[in-house]
Length: 197
Image 1 (cartoon, rainbow, N blue to C red):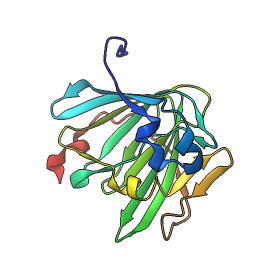
Image 2 (cartoon, rainbow, N blue to C red):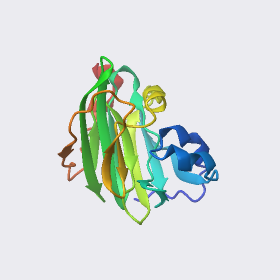
Image 3 (cartoon, rainbow, N blue to C red):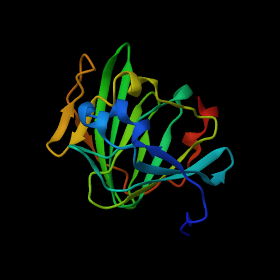
Image 4 (cartoon, rainbow, N blue to C red):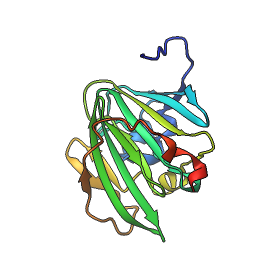
C-alpha cells in the first residue's frame, strides 16, 4: 500500500545546507537559497527500524545533478534504500585511515534496492529529468554523520552533465566501480539491527 505524504511535514534540505558539498563552488556562492529535496522521517516503523521517504525533484546545479548531502553511519549500521519512483545513482565510498579505500556506484530504477554496507558513506543522486522518490529502512539508533562530506566538500566523485569528476579534496581516489542493484527488496531486514554488531 502506497504511503500518502500530503498531510506530513517534511524536513527540507535547502541550497544553503548544501553549498559546501557541491561541485561548482563559484556558482553556489551566488545561487539563491531554493529547496532541493524533502525528507519524510518515520513514516513507518517495524520494531526498532524506521522507514523514511525522500523526494528529490529533478534539477541541475549548474553542471552537477542534484543529490543528497551525503553521510556516514555511526557504529557500523547498515541502511537499505528502495527506489519508489524515477531513477537513482548511489555513490558509496569507504573512507578509512585518511583515504578512500573503496568506492562504487549503483544505478537503480523503480523496484530496485541498494544496501549501504557497514563503514561506508553514501550520496543519492537524481540523474534524470524526473522526480526521484526513495524509501529507506534503518535502525532508529543509527546516527547520520556528515563531517567527512562537509570537510571534503562532497563525495570523492561528483556526477555531472559530463559524467563523473573526481573531487580533488581527496588525496587518493580509486577508480570508480559500477555495481548492480538488488532487483527485489529483501524480506528479512534483521541485518539492519544494531544488535547484530
